[in-house]
Amino acid sequence: MICLTGDIHHTSLETNEQRFVESGDSEVKIACRFLKIIEKYGLKVTFYVTGKTFDEEWENLKLITDSNLVEIGGHTYGGLPLGNFSKILHKIIGRCPPSHSPTYGSYFQQKRDIKRMIELAEKKTAWKIISWRSHGYIHDENTYSILAQMGIKMISDEISSKKIFPEKIKEGLISHPINTIPDHDHLYHAHRDGEFVRKAKIAGYGRDDFGSDSHSIEIWGEMVQKQVVEIEEKEGLATILMHPICMYTADKFKTAERLLEFISQYKTILAKEIMWRIK
Image 1 (cartoon, rainbow, N blue to C red):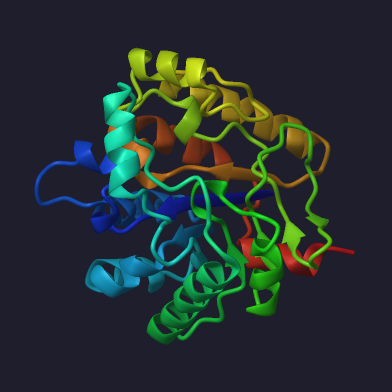
Image 2: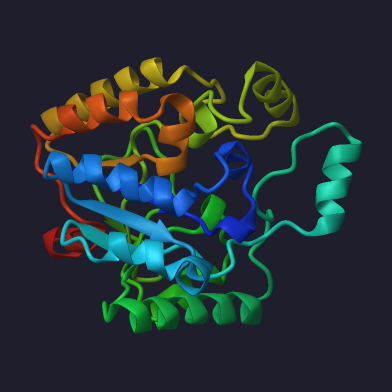
């Protein structure tokens, strides 16, 4: 069984990938095109979307939320934007600034951000938002208790090469780790060229349970396929992360389509459907 996921961010967040998008295009428009491929193969997908996307790009985002194959999950309201001072500091030391802050903020900042995201998404879609992935997986000792208070049931922040089953964590949420190699920090695309990855390794940035190496999208796709087969053989749940903008900037969806066609031989479920399968 597979939980296919992707993250979508508002244009005004100005992530590194967005600098490589053609004029007139946007991350949301790219996600719309990505969804067309997903629909072609009849797959279900959970998109974690920043709240500001609903505020600023609703006309295009509505094309995604209207699909009966899509679940919308929370991805913070503002995307934890990096401050101007931090951006300047990174540039001074010759490093590409990350697309988000390394911290979520105070308890009250987090609660305000999470509440705003959930209320806005539910107002726009009339859906109950129960799934969440923090931008950059950023969270602290307060985050999950706040999410539980706000009615969130599912969380997908952990990256694990070993966990193949969802588990209930102490705050009461059900965690389903990303257990196939994530795309963003392991994929050469957009700004992530050989020099960027070399500097990231030296700085200790981007290392997770799958290591710190990056790969061509073709090799990455083969790795995901192999990992899916291994998890399926053990009757586990494979959670896959495919950012639409990463898939596009890497090779214009060529590998993504091959991978989605491969996935179509298995059953896909939405993140919110996982909770009914926990014993």
